[in-house]
Image (cartoon, rainbow, N blue to C red; front, side, top):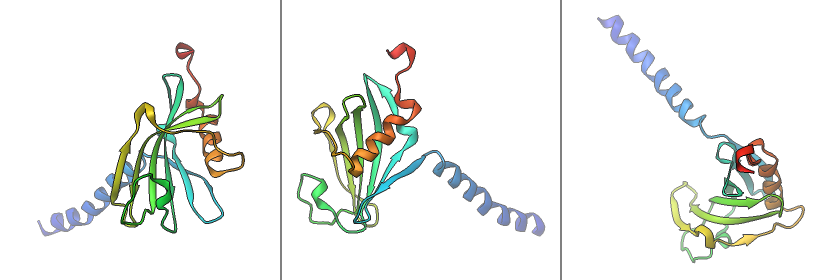
Length: 150
């Protein structure tokens, strides 16, 4: 009985760790670029989908220094990261912000804003980090319409 108990105690952390690893592997965040100040721009590859004539995806921006300029509402707490849900017209080179979630240094959500169809439409400057993200998203195979969507 003591041997069985010791074996179970030894196996539980391994099972728990493998379960956590399996959950973490469901998301496929890819770092696309970093800018001159060290901000990281990532895209969740599994989120890229072509629907309703546009490419939809999640982008994550990670800031080494607070960046409250990204969000249009005034926050008392510093913003260290943002998750942006976007739709993009790859042919036109534009994207529309659909949702943004900004977080503090400990990754606690500070603010969530849902814009839906009224989100800001932007065309990134050539050579910018935003342009690199849009180019990356549009080159993914899942960004192309299927035969039934054309």
